[in-house]
Length: 146
Image (cartoon, rainbow, N blue to C red):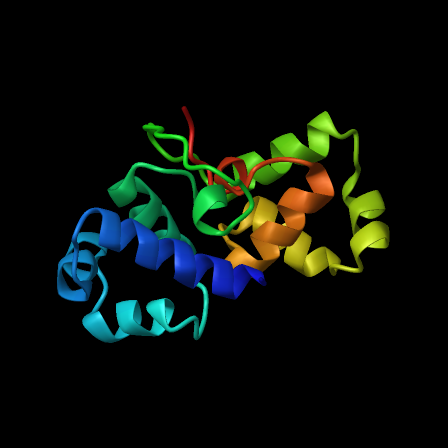
């Protein structure tokens, strides 16, 4: 299964376990019912904000919802830190300069600069790729702290 299918399937499972319908979830995460229906059909991945809200609502990790972890670990996360801090920590811990990161990934300097200094946040798809590159969880990059 791919990430999109994994997410849709895991979301359905979480909703079924708690006997939650789309309107209830939509209200809880600040989305409309159409958005939740599209997520359940696997049409696209949620925005970062909705991903965090869904994971918080079901008290699980974003990595589990995306199928990157096999089993749900009940986890309560604290305040979210900005993506720029998480990304900066990854660069620092991996001893990777912006230049080296640019060369290895082909991501432009302007995008990297935006992530670090302008509050720009990549899509969930890009965050998944970054988590694989740095060997960290999606939750870490989304700024979800224990």
